[in-house]
Length: 403
Image (cartoon, rainbow, N blue to C red; front, side, top):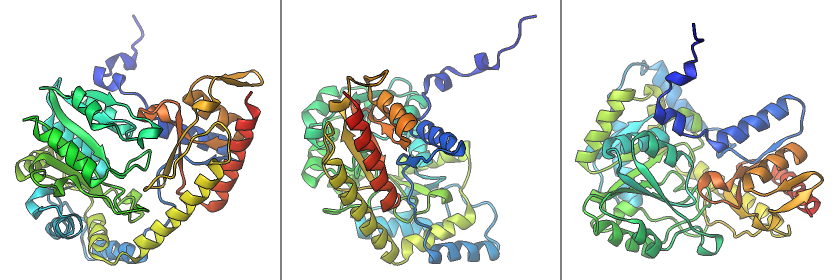
């Protein structure tokens, strides 16, 4: 009898989706650290702050008051109302509570939106660099990713002409992530208005606007696509409490969309999971309706860390860098270091560089190719100043070792 191989029972869609580079590099760093290595991890995009005490207390109070049961699929009514009010007041988005669907994190909200809108073969524009989860989600939902590249000199934002050339009658979605992971790029209102004109010229096209980093900006606050004239009915706004409020482990995200799309998103949510965690939603309610003092303190800290990392990076030959206007990420062009050797190692790609940097210098980063930005690497500066300084010192040593 032939030995059964469980791997042969996997679906084509599952086998086709690559393992996330961020998770892979993070795990590799953890394994090295477990074996005694002094690893500096600049990989994962997670605030290193604790969730503010008032938010934690609100969740604890809710739990103690018996809020431990199933909630409506779309979320508790008071949180949906609060999010709609926040979108109207802070973002200029004319949302109502009926347009808001809570999810188990913004990542699930994105997944819900894709499964609610995409048919097999529909094309999805991914302006690169982009968060690497987008591509896998689109493929899982049956969509066809269409990657539109950009460069450091373009501010990591593809020109509108390049996007327009890629659009056709099969284009269903355009992903927008402003502020951006991995580059920290922010689309200006003028750029968004140009993109909106493109979207309106295609009868089936919607924008999925991922705004999870909206509170982590340094130069000017970002503009929401759905706030532009005629774009609310064309936009699914994705957000949550993970990044701005340091609530990554709470898994509370949401989508806000025209009512018909919101109902479809809720149908997907109800099919795959159901409503999210009850008391976590009460914690999110405290975050959304509470003061922003702690958010502002965290934002100031991220700016200081960005400035520190950028100053150190600019002194390293072979690396091209511009200060990102938002987020706690820096996307550095290392193409000047590729094609060189150190000992028996010849470094040809960004992935090879990241692996070599981790193995030889114990600094964990993420290859830009995972985000559609080959020749770059991404740093997360959501960590201590001392780790940033030591990490950049080691990176400089690595660059000097290449000949």
